[in-house]
Image (tube, rainbow, N blue to C red):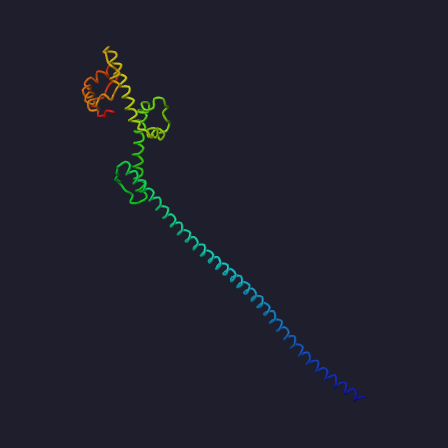
Length: 259
């Protein structure tokens, strides 16, 4: 019995020492678990921080990539704009060169038609503007010439075209004086016919006996003699014209007698 008690006591003491050592190991294990938990928590925080940094870095990389793409696009747009600007400048230069050529051509044509040259008092030292200034001078001269020609042709129109209405535009008026026939010769011949009729009327009014058959036979007279007779009759021209109600000009007649 005593042995059993001693065994039990010894076993109890062994259990107690084992329990004490177990408690110590458990405490160490708990301490190690706390340390591991703390490290795990720190590791998790570090992981989250690393993920955050990585995310921010990725966002910055994407932003940098977008900015790089934007810069590249802007560079391309700038190059396209410069190319378009150079093409526009080239086209503008070609256009101005063509305009200058046309202006100079018009100025040469006007100068050849009017025989009038101009000098610019204050040139712009710009070929295009100076050519335009010359064209303005020629245009002013042409306008003044058209005004004067229109006034002169309007006065002459009733004499050349007594049965026609005067055209409304200057171009039509000027064209009417440029038919295929010679209007000046036609008018002189008409005036000659009227002069002959007036002369016959004056002779008839003088009650002189005239053989009109011989007068009308132009083959009976030479042209030189006929012209000398006209020259001899000129001193009486003013009297006859005054009788007919016509006031002659003060300048001597230089018209060539029509045959």
